[in-house]
Length: 464
Image (cartoon, rainbow, N blue to C red):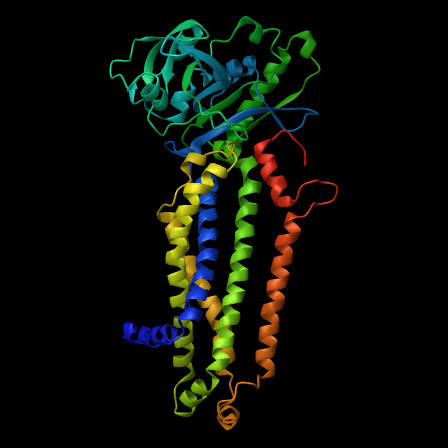
Protein backbone atom coordinates (compact mmCIF):
# COMPACT_ATOMS: atom_id res chain seq x y z
CA UNK A 1 0.00 0.00 0.00
CA UNK A 2 2.73 2.45 0.98
CA UNK A 3 4.77 1.64 -2.13
CA UNK A 4 1.68 2.22 -4.24
CA UNK A 5 1.23 5.65 -2.65
CA UNK A 6 4.86 6.46 -3.47
CA UNK A 7 4.33 5.71 -7.16
CA UNK A 8 2.12 8.76 -7.72
CA UNK A 9 4.48 11.44 -6.29
CA UNK A 10 7.43 9.62 -7.89
CA UNK A 11 5.71 9.79 -11.28
CA UNK A 12 5.06 13.51 -10.77
CA UNK A 13 8.75 14.11 -9.99
CA UNK A 14 9.96 12.12 -13.00
CA UNK A 15 7.75 14.24 -15.24
CA UNK A 16 9.67 17.35 -14.11
CA UNK A 17 13.36 16.31 -14.17
CA UNK A 18 14.66 19.89 -14.11
CA UNK A 19 12.70 20.74 -10.97
CA UNK A 20 13.63 17.43 -9.32
CA UNK A 21 17.36 17.76 -10.00
CA UNK A 22 17.44 21.37 -8.79
CA UNK A 23 15.56 20.51 -5.60
CA UNK A 24 17.72 17.44 -4.84
CA UNK A 25 20.97 19.35 -5.40
CA UNK A 26 19.77 22.21 -3.20
CA UNK A 27 18.87 19.83 -0.38
CA UNK A 28 22.01 17.73 -0.82
CA UNK A 29 24.17 20.80 -0.26
CA UNK A 30 22.14 21.98 2.74
CA UNK A 31 21.81 18.59 4.43
CA UNK A 32 25.39 17.62 3.53
CA UNK A 33 26.87 20.77 5.06
CA UNK A 34 24.74 20.44 8.19
CA UNK A 35 25.62 16.74 8.56
CA UNK A 36 29.34 17.44 8.15
CA UNK A 37 29.28 20.12 10.84
CA UNK A 38 27.14 17.95 13.12
CA UNK A 39 29.82 15.26 12.90
CA UNK A 40 32.22 17.85 14.36
CA UNK A 41 29.69 18.74 17.07
CA UNK A 42 29.20 15.06 17.92
CA UNK A 43 32.90 14.19 17.86
CA UNK A 44 34.12 17.22 19.80
CA UNK A 45 31.27 18.25 22.11
CA UNK A 46 28.80 15.40 22.53
CA UNK A 47 30.75 12.14 22.45
CA UNK A 48 31.98 10.98 25.88
CA UNK A 49 35.73 10.96 26.45
CA UNK A 50 37.34 7.67 25.30
CA UNK A 51 37.99 6.37 28.80
CA UNK A 52 36.08 3.89 31.02
CA UNK A 53 33.25 5.57 32.97
CA UNK A 54 34.18 9.05 31.66
CA UNK A 55 31.47 10.67 33.80
CA UNK A 56 33.69 10.08 36.86
CA UNK A 57 36.73 11.83 35.34
CA UNK A 58 37.32 15.34 36.69
CA UNK A 59 39.89 18.10 36.47
CA UNK A 60 41.14 19.70 39.68
CA UNK A 61 42.60 23.21 39.54
CA UNK A 62 43.07 26.40 41.55
CA UNK A 63 41.45 29.79 41.17
CA UNK A 64 43.62 32.65 42.38
CA UNK A 65 41.80 35.42 44.23
CA UNK A 66 41.85 38.43 41.91
CA UNK A 67 43.04 36.27 39.03
CA UNK A 68 41.47 35.60 35.65
CA UNK A 69 39.82 32.19 35.76
CA UNK A 70 41.47 28.87 36.56
CA UNK A 71 45.23 28.95 37.05
CA UNK A 72 46.15 25.27 37.04
CA UNK A 73 47.99 23.90 40.07
CA UNK A 74 51.49 24.10 41.56
CA UNK A 75 53.91 21.29 42.36
CA UNK A 76 53.16 21.49 46.12
CA UNK A 77 49.43 21.48 45.30
CA UNK A 78 49.77 18.18 43.45
CA UNK A 79 51.49 16.55 46.40
CA UNK A 80 48.97 17.96 48.89
CA UNK A 81 45.84 17.12 46.91
CA UNK A 82 47.12 13.62 46.10
CA UNK A 83 48.07 12.91 49.70
CA UNK A 84 45.23 14.53 51.67
CA UNK A 85 42.01 14.27 49.65
CA UNK A 86 39.67 11.31 50.16
CA UNK A 87 37.14 11.65 47.33
CA UNK A 88 39.22 10.22 44.50
CA UNK A 89 39.80 6.64 43.44
CA UNK A 90 42.97 7.92 41.77
CA UNK A 91 44.43 11.40 41.33
CA UNK A 92 47.54 12.71 39.62
CA UNK A 93 49.23 15.73 38.08
CA UNK A 94 50.70 16.29 34.65
CA UNK A 95 52.53 18.87 32.55
CA UNK A 96 52.94 18.95 28.74
CA UNK A 97 56.63 19.26 27.83
CA UNK A 98 58.97 18.73 24.90
CA UNK A 99 62.12 16.61 24.61
CA UNK A 100 64.86 16.00 22.12
CA UNK A 101 64.57 12.31 21.24
CA UNK A 102 67.82 10.67 20.14
CA UNK A 103 69.56 7.33 20.21
CA UNK A 104 67.17 5.92 17.59
CA UNK A 105 67.79 7.51 14.21
CA UNK A 106 68.08 11.25 13.66
CA UNK A 107 67.45 13.47 16.72
CA UNK A 108 63.96 15.00 16.73
CA UNK A 109 61.78 17.13 18.97
CA UNK A 110 58.79 15.27 20.39
CA UNK A 111 55.77 16.31 22.42
CA UNK A 112 55.61 14.58 25.76
CA UNK A 113 54.08 14.82 29.22
CA UNK A 114 55.43 14.55 32.72
CA UNK A 115 52.89 12.68 34.84
CA UNK A 116 52.66 11.56 38.43
CA UNK A 117 51.91 7.93 39.15
CA UNK A 118 48.18 8.48 39.68
CA UNK A 119 47.29 9.72 36.19
CA UNK A 120 47.18 6.41 34.30
CA UNK A 121 45.08 4.70 37.05
CA UNK A 122 42.73 7.72 37.05
CA UNK A 123 42.20 7.42 33.29
CA UNK A 124 41.43 3.72 33.69
CA UNK A 125 43.33 2.64 30.58
CA UNK A 126 45.62 -0.33 29.97
CA UNK A 127 48.86 -0.36 27.96
CA UNK A 128 49.11 -2.25 24.71
CA UNK A 129 52.41 -3.69 25.89
CA UNK A 130 54.29 -3.56 29.17
CA UNK A 131 53.18 -1.48 32.15
CA UNK A 132 52.88 2.05 33.53
CA UNK A 133 55.32 3.70 35.90
CA UNK A 134 54.29 3.77 39.55
CA UNK A 135 54.20 6.55 42.13
CA UNK A 136 57.21 4.92 43.78
CA UNK A 137 59.20 5.20 40.54
CA UNK A 138 58.07 8.82 40.30
CA UNK A 139 59.24 9.54 43.86
CA UNK A 140 62.58 7.77 43.24
CA UNK A 141 63.27 9.79 40.06
CA UNK A 142 63.37 6.62 37.94
CA UNK A 143 64.14 7.42 34.29
CA UNK A 144 61.49 5.26 32.63
CA UNK A 145 59.04 6.06 29.84
CA UNK A 146 55.84 4.87 28.20
CA UNK A 147 55.71 5.57 24.45
CA UNK A 148 52.78 6.15 22.10
CA UNK A 149 51.69 3.66 19.47
CA UNK A 150 52.73 6.11 16.74
CA UNK A 151 56.23 6.58 18.16
CA UNK A 152 56.61 2.84 18.68
CA UNK A 153 55.69 2.16 15.04
CA UNK A 154 57.63 5.04 13.45
CA UNK A 155 60.79 5.49 15.51
CA UNK A 156 61.03 2.09 17.21
CA UNK A 157 59.94 0.17 14.08
CA UNK A 158 57.16 -1.68 15.90
CA UNK A 159 59.74 -3.83 17.69
CA UNK A 160 57.89 -6.46 19.75
CA UNK A 161 60.92 -6.65 22.06
CA UNK A 162 61.13 -2.91 22.69
CA UNK A 163 60.44 -3.22 26.43
CA UNK A 164 63.64 -2.70 28.38
CA UNK A 165 65.44 -0.85 25.59
CA UNK A 166 66.78 2.66 26.14
CA UNK A 167 66.13 5.93 24.34
CA UNK A 168 67.70 9.33 24.98
CA UNK A 169 65.51 12.24 26.07
CA UNK A 170 67.48 15.48 26.24
CA UNK A 171 70.53 13.17 26.10
CA UNK A 172 69.49 11.29 29.27
CA UNK A 173 68.80 7.54 29.05
CA UNK A 174 65.22 6.41 29.68
CA UNK A 175 64.07 2.78 29.74
CA UNK A 176 60.96 1.97 27.68
CA UNK A 177 58.55 0.09 29.98
CA UNK A 178 55.27 0.35 28.05
CA UNK A 179 53.50 1.10 24.76
CA UNK A 180 50.06 2.73 24.65
CA UNK A 181 47.16 1.68 22.36
CA UNK A 182 46.74 3.36 18.98
CA UNK A 183 43.80 5.58 20.00
CA UNK A 184 45.17 6.80 23.35
CA UNK A 185 45.62 10.56 23.63
CA UNK A 186 46.44 12.50 26.79
CA UNK A 187 46.75 15.25 27.90
CA UNK A 188 43.69 16.71 26.20
CA UNK A 189 44.88 20.27 26.66
CA UNK A 190 42.10 22.73 25.70
CA UNK A 191 43.21 25.29 23.13
CA UNK A 192 46.71 23.87 22.71
CA UNK A 193 48.25 21.41 20.27
CA UNK A 194 49.97 18.65 22.21
CA UNK A 195 49.72 15.18 20.75
CA UNK A 196 51.99 13.53 23.29
CA UNK A 197 54.29 10.85 21.94
CA UNK A 198 55.68 9.65 25.26
CA UNK A 199 55.10 9.96 29.00
CA UNK A 200 57.64 10.11 31.83
CA UNK A 201 57.40 10.32 35.64
CA UNK A 202 56.82 13.81 37.04
CA UNK A 203 59.80 13.61 39.45
CA UNK A 204 59.55 17.17 40.79
CA UNK A 205 62.77 19.13 41.07
CA UNK A 206 63.70 20.82 44.33
CA UNK A 207 63.18 24.21 42.71
CA UNK A 208 59.61 23.32 41.66
CA UNK A 209 58.78 22.45 45.26
CA UNK A 210 60.39 25.54 46.84
CA UNK A 211 61.13 28.74 44.91
CA UNK A 212 58.90 27.59 42.05
CA UNK A 213 55.97 26.91 44.36
CA UNK A 214 54.15 29.98 43.01
CA UNK A 215 54.19 28.63 39.44
CA UNK A 216 50.78 27.30 38.43
CA UNK A 217 52.23 25.37 35.50
CA UNK A 218 50.65 21.97 36.15
CA UNK A 219 47.23 20.35 35.84
CA UNK A 220 45.48 17.51 37.65
CA UNK A 221 43.08 14.76 36.64
CA UNK A 222 41.23 12.42 38.96
CA UNK A 223 38.65 9.65 39.00
CA UNK A 224 35.90 10.11 41.57
CA UNK A 225 35.11 7.26 43.91
CA UNK A 226 31.79 5.55 43.20
CA UNK A 227 28.95 7.58 44.70
CA UNK A 228 31.02 10.75 45.16
CA UNK A 229 29.85 13.88 43.34
CA UNK A 230 32.02 16.65 41.92
CA UNK A 231 30.59 19.03 44.55
CA UNK A 232 31.65 16.68 47.37
CA UNK A 233 35.11 16.33 45.84
CA UNK A 234 35.40 20.11 45.57
CA UNK A 235 34.57 20.54 49.27
CA UNK A 236 37.24 17.95 50.04
CA UNK A 237 39.78 19.76 47.83
CA UNK A 238 38.91 23.18 49.31
CA UNK A 239 39.72 21.83 52.77
CA UNK A 240 43.15 20.77 51.51
CA UNK A 241 43.61 24.14 49.76
CA UNK A 242 43.06 25.98 53.05
CA UNK A 243 45.62 23.76 54.75
CA UNK A 244 48.06 24.32 51.88
CA UNK A 245 47.75 28.11 52.15
CA UNK A 246 48.74 27.96 55.82
CA UNK A 247 52.03 26.31 54.84
CA UNK A 248 52.90 28.80 52.09
CA UNK A 249 56.39 30.37 52.29
CA UNK A 250 56.51 34.09 53.27
CA UNK A 251 56.68 35.35 49.67
CA UNK A 252 53.33 33.62 48.96
CA UNK A 253 51.55 34.53 52.20
CA UNK A 254 49.25 37.07 50.53
CA UNK A 255 47.94 34.58 47.94
CA UNK A 256 44.46 33.10 48.31
CA UNK A 257 43.35 30.09 46.29
CA UNK A 258 40.12 28.20 45.82
CA UNK A 259 39.99 24.62 44.56
CA UNK A 260 37.71 23.83 41.61
CA UNK A 261 36.61 20.33 40.59
CA UNK A 262 34.71 19.93 37.34
CA UNK A 263 34.12 17.46 34.54
CA UNK A 264 37.22 16.66 32.48
CA UNK A 265 34.99 16.59 29.40
CA UNK A 266 33.75 20.11 30.08
CA UNK A 267 37.27 21.43 30.64
CA UNK A 268 38.49 19.77 27.45
CA UNK A 269 35.86 21.21 25.11
CA UNK A 270 35.14 24.60 26.71
CA UNK A 271 37.26 26.73 24.37
CA UNK A 272 36.05 24.86 21.29
CA UNK A 273 32.37 25.12 22.21
CA UNK A 274 31.80 28.62 20.81
CA UNK A 275 33.47 27.86 17.48
CA UNK A 276 31.72 24.52 16.95
CA UNK A 277 28.29 25.78 17.99
CA UNK A 278 28.68 28.87 15.79
CA UNK A 279 29.61 26.74 12.77
CA UNK A 280 26.62 24.48 13.41
CA UNK A 281 24.22 27.42 13.71
CA UNK A 282 25.64 28.95 10.52
CA UNK A 283 25.05 25.74 8.55
CA UNK A 284 21.55 25.43 10.01
CA UNK A 285 20.88 28.92 8.66
CA UNK A 286 22.08 27.76 5.23
CA UNK A 287 19.77 24.74 5.49
CA UNK A 288 16.84 27.00 6.41
CA UNK A 289 17.52 29.05 3.28
CA UNK A 290 17.53 25.82 1.23
CA UNK A 291 14.23 24.80 2.87
CA UNK A 292 12.68 28.18 2.07
CA UNK A 293 13.85 27.85 -1.54
CA UNK A 294 12.41 24.35 -1.81
CA UNK A 295 9.12 25.45 -0.25
CA UNK A 296 8.98 28.25 -2.81
CA UNK A 297 9.61 25.83 -5.68
CA UNK A 298 6.95 23.46 -4.37
CA UNK A 299 4.51 26.36 -4.04
CA UNK A 300 5.09 27.45 -7.65
CA UNK A 301 4.77 23.82 -8.74
CA UNK A 302 1.50 23.54 -6.81
CA UNK A 303 0.14 26.69 -8.46
CA UNK A 304 0.89 25.23 -11.89
CA UNK A 305 -1.04 22.10 -10.92
CA UNK A 306 -4.06 23.98 -9.52
CA UNK A 307 -6.41 22.79 -12.25
CA UNK A 308 -5.35 19.15 -11.80
CA UNK A 309 -5.87 19.43 -8.03
CA UNK A 310 -9.24 21.14 -8.55
CA UNK A 311 -10.37 18.32 -10.85
CA UNK A 312 -9.34 15.69 -8.29
CA UNK A 313 -11.22 17.52 -5.56
CA UNK A 314 -14.28 17.92 -7.80
CA UNK A 315 -14.25 14.17 -8.41
CA UNK A 316 -14.32 13.55 -4.66
CA UNK A 317 -10.65 12.97 -3.85
CA UNK A 318 -10.22 13.42 -0.07
CA UNK A 319 -8.13 16.42 0.95
CA UNK A 320 -6.13 14.15 3.26
CA UNK A 321 -5.08 11.96 0.33
CA UNK A 322 -3.93 14.96 -1.70
CA UNK A 323 -2.08 16.36 1.31
CA UNK A 324 -0.35 13.00 1.87
CA UNK A 325 0.73 12.87 -1.79
CA UNK A 326 2.21 16.37 -1.56
CA UNK A 327 4.12 15.58 1.63
CA UNK A 328 5.37 12.26 0.20
CA UNK A 329 6.63 14.13 -2.85
CA UNK A 330 8.54 16.50 -0.57
CA UNK A 331 9.87 13.56 1.48
CA UNK A 332 11.09 11.81 -1.66
CA UNK A 333 13.04 14.93 -2.55
CA UNK A 334 14.44 15.39 0.96
CA UNK A 335 15.53 11.76 1.43
CA UNK A 336 17.12 11.67 -2.02
CA UNK A 337 18.90 14.91 -1.15
CA UNK A 338 19.83 13.39 2.20
CA UNK A 339 21.47 10.35 0.57
CA UNK A 340 23.57 12.58 -1.66
CA UNK A 341 24.12 14.92 1.30
CA UNK A 342 25.67 12.15 3.42
CA UNK A 343 28.01 11.38 0.52
CA UNK A 344 28.96 15.04 0.26
CA UNK A 345 29.45 15.17 4.04
CA UNK A 346 31.86 12.22 3.89
CA UNK A 347 33.87 13.96 1.16
CA UNK A 348 33.77 17.27 3.03
CA UNK A 349 35.08 15.64 6.21
CA UNK A 350 38.02 14.06 4.39
CA UNK A 351 39.06 17.48 3.13
CA UNK A 352 37.65 19.76 5.81
CA UNK A 353 39.14 18.19 8.95
CA UNK A 354 42.60 19.17 7.75
CA UNK A 355 41.41 22.79 7.55
CA UNK A 356 40.16 22.92 11.14
CA UNK A 357 42.35 24.57 13.80
CA UNK A 358 44.98 22.08 14.97
CA UNK A 359 44.21 23.14 18.53
CA UNK A 360 40.63 21.89 18.27
CA UNK A 361 40.40 19.16 20.94
CA UNK A 362 39.52 15.57 19.97
CA UNK A 363 39.90 16.37 16.28
CA UNK A 364 40.93 12.76 15.59
CA UNK A 365 37.50 11.59 16.84
CA UNK A 366 35.57 13.44 14.12
CA UNK A 367 34.02 10.85 11.79
CA UNK A 368 30.81 9.91 10.02
CA UNK A 369 29.46 7.30 12.44
CA UNK A 370 26.03 5.83 13.14
CA UNK A 371 24.93 8.76 15.29
CA UNK A 372 25.72 11.20 12.49
CA UNK A 373 23.91 9.10 9.86
CA UNK A 374 20.88 8.89 12.18
CA UNK A 375 20.98 12.68 12.51
CA UNK A 376 21.01 12.99 8.70
CA UNK A 377 17.97 10.67 8.43
CA UNK A 378 15.99 12.64 11.02
CA UNK A 379 17.06 15.92 9.42
CA UNK A 380 15.93 14.71 5.99
CA UNK A 381 12.54 13.67 7.37
CA UNK A 382 11.98 16.98 9.16
CA UNK A 383 13.11 18.92 6.09
CA UNK A 384 10.68 17.04 3.86
CA UNK A 385 7.74 17.53 6.21
CA UNK A 386 8.43 21.22 6.88
CA UNK A 387 9.02 22.03 3.21
CA UNK A 388 5.99 20.08 2.01
CA UNK A 389 3.24 21.08 4.43
CA UNK A 390 2.91 24.82 3.74
CA UNK A 391 2.79 24.55 -0.09
CA UNK A 392 0.46 21.55 0.22
CA UNK A 393 -2.01 23.43 2.42
CA UNK A 394 -1.80 26.42 0.09
CA UNK A 395 -2.59 24.22 -2.92
CA UNK A 396 -5.54 22.59 -1.13
CA UNK A 397 -7.05 26.02 -0.46
CA UNK A 398 -7.71 26.25 -4.19
CA UNK A 399 -11.29 27.25 -5.03
CA UNK A 400 -12.56 24.40 -7.18
CA UNK A 401 -15.24 26.40 -9.02
CA UNK A 402 -13.05 29.42 -9.74
CA UNK A 403 -10.12 27.31 -10.91
CA UNK A 404 -12.24 25.22 -13.25
CA UNK A 405 -13.91 28.37 -14.63
CA UNK A 406 -10.44 29.77 -15.44
CA UNK A 407 -10.04 26.92 -17.89
CA UNK A 408 -6.43 26.19 -16.96
CA UNK A 409 -5.18 29.77 -16.87
CA UNK A 410 -2.40 30.20 -14.28
CA UNK A 411 -2.16 33.96 -14.29
CA UNK A 412 -4.55 34.50 -11.38
CA UNK A 413 -3.04 33.83 -7.97
CA UNK A 414 -5.05 34.01 -4.75
CA UNK A 415 -4.16 36.42 -1.99
CA UNK A 416 -3.15 33.55 0.27
CA UNK A 417 -0.67 32.26 -2.29
CA UNK A 418 0.78 35.73 -2.77
CA UNK A 419 1.13 36.11 1.00
CA UNK A 420 2.93 32.76 1.34
CA UNK A 421 5.34 33.52 -1.50
CA UNK A 422 6.09 36.93 0.03
CA UNK A 423 6.62 35.33 3.43
CA UNK A 424 9.09 32.81 1.98
CA UNK A 425 11.07 35.56 0.24
CA UNK A 426 11.08 37.69 3.39
CA UNK A 427 12.24 34.75 5.50
CA UNK A 428 15.12 34.03 3.11
CA UNK A 429 16.23 37.66 3.27
CA UNK A 430 15.97 37.70 7.07
CA UNK A 431 17.93 34.46 7.43
CA UNK A 432 20.62 35.69 5.03
CA UNK A 433 20.92 38.94 7.01
CA UNK A 434 21.42 36.95 10.23
CA UNK A 435 24.25 34.99 8.60
CA UNK A 436 25.75 38.20 7.21
CA UNK A 437 25.53 39.93 10.59
CA UNK A 438 27.40 37.04 12.21
CA UNK A 439 30.31 37.64 9.85
CA UNK A 440 30.51 41.41 10.40
CA UNK A 441 32.75 43.07 13.01
CA UNK A 442 30.93 43.33 16.37
CA UNK A 443 31.77 46.83 17.61
CA UNK A 444 35.48 47.58 17.71
CA UNK A 445 36.45 43.93 17.20
CA UNK A 446 38.34 43.63 13.87
CA UNK A 447 36.88 40.17 13.24
CA UNK A 448 33.37 38.96 12.60
CA UNK A 449 31.73 36.69 15.17
CA UNK A 450 32.49 33.56 13.12
CA UNK A 451 36.11 34.55 12.54
CA UNK A 452 36.52 35.68 16.15
CA UNK A 453 35.34 32.27 17.36
CA UNK A 454 37.85 30.55 15.09
CA UNK A 455 40.64 32.86 16.26
CA UNK A 456 39.80 32.08 19.90
CA UNK A 457 40.40 28.36 19.45
CA UNK A 458 43.54 28.94 17.35
CA UNK A 459 45.04 31.35 19.88
CA UNK A 460 43.23 31.07 23.24
CA UNK A 461 45.36 33.74 24.89
CA UNK A 462 44.51 36.49 22.39
CA UNK A 463 41.70 38.95 22.57
CA UNK A 464 39.01 39.69 20.01
